[in-house]
Length: 122
Image (cartoon, rainbow, N blue to C red; front, side, top):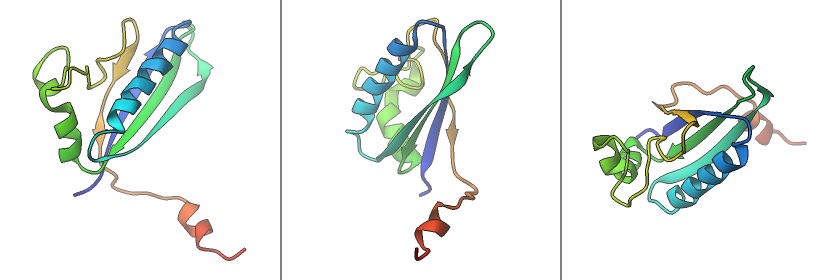
């Protein structure tokens, strides 16, 4: 089973950054206690949009699609995205006017130097 990366882009209006970061942390706390959770990485743009908003990218890695689906479960079936634990998942847990664009991805190629450097003698 290949890992699944859930990659959400999040558009946060000026002045709501702290709230968005808090909501994200609440979800990471919840997800990290679930079977199949691997990791989460949160990015914040260094540039603001013309309207003052700022973009974030949140990447949550699951051991498999099945692990992800088990946590999201009922969230696929209702407009609120509420899962069986009462959590609003699939990017729906952020208050308006924060806009989340969720997506699920599998790695098909990875190019980097971390593995090469780690194996070298210094």
